Amino acid sequence: MIKSDLIGKTQFPDKIRVVKYKSIKALYEMATAKIWIDNCRKEFYPIKRKGQYYIQTWHSPLRLKKIEKDAESFLSPEYIKSAIKDSKNIDLMISGCDFSWNIYRNSFWYDGDILKIGTPRCDLFFQDAKEIKEKVMNFFGLATKSKIILFAPTFRRRNSIDVYSLEYKKILKILEEKYREEWVFLVRLHPNVSYLSEVIEYNQKVLNATNYEDMQELLYTADILITDYSSSMFDMAIARKPCFLHCKDIEEYLNNERGMYFNVNKLPFSFSKTDEELIKNIILFDNEEYNRKLDDFHKEVNIYEDGTASMKIVEKIKDITK
Image (spheres, rainbow, N blue to C red):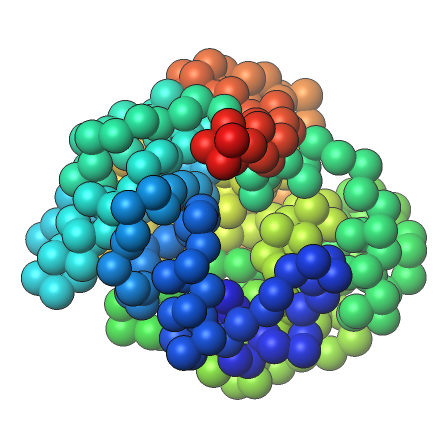
C-alpha cells in the first residue's frame, strides 16, 4: 500500500501488487493477506482475522526523541487509544539493538515476541549497491565524482522551517578546501513540512531533495549528514559515515518537545548551536576519532545490525506460512 502521490513514481518488482492507501482495494488486500508488515502505527485496517500474522518493523533502528508511552503526555488520547489497539494486533516486533528492544518492551503497550535481528531498512548500508548511488546521482543530475552533504533536520510541532537557514555557501567552500573535491548540498524537508520546500532558495550547488522517494537511498548515497534531532543520525552511525548535529534551538526544543533518550552532547556526533560552530566542527573532523566513538556507542546500545535482517524476516515468514 502506498500513498496516492507516490503511485507511478516508485518502481516495484513485477510480482508486487500496488494499491492506494486507504482505498477499498487496500482494505481487500489487508483482509485477505496472510502476513501484515508495517513500520508505523496502522490507522486504517480491517478486523484482523484468525491466522493472520502482523510483523511490526518500526521506522528507525534507534531514536533520540522519546516515543509512545515514554512521550504519553505529548500524545493525543485518540492516538494512544489507536496505538494500544494496534499493539494488541502485533504478533512480532524486531529490534536492531538492546536499547531499542527495551523501548519496544516497556513503551509500546506490547508484550509479545521481539526478535533481535537488526533493522531491514538498514541492510542497504552493508551492500555495495552501485545502482542505488547511480539512481540518486542521475535523479539530481550530478556527476559521479560529486560528493553529497545531506541536510535533513526533523520537524517542530509549530511546523517552522527556520532551522533550514544555513550558511550553505561557506560550508561547501570549507568542504571543498578540506577534501579537495566537488561538493553539493541536498536539502530534505521533513514530510510534515514538505509543502514548504519551495520557500528555500536553491541553486546548482544546493538542491531540493524533499520529493525524492526514499530517504534510505539518500542516506546511502550521501557522504555527510547534517541533522538535529532526527533518527537518521543513527542510520549514518550504522553506515559509519560522518554526521554533524546542528541544534540551533536546543533549549527551546528540550522545553517544548517530547524529551530525549540520550544527551546530545554525549553522542558520537559533533554538536553545534551556531553555523560558526558547525563550520569549526567540519574543519576539525577526524574520521579515526569518530569511528572510535561509534565503536563505544554501539557497545553501549549493544547493536546487532549486520545487513541480514531482511533475510531473517523472510525465513520467519517461511516458517509462519508452512
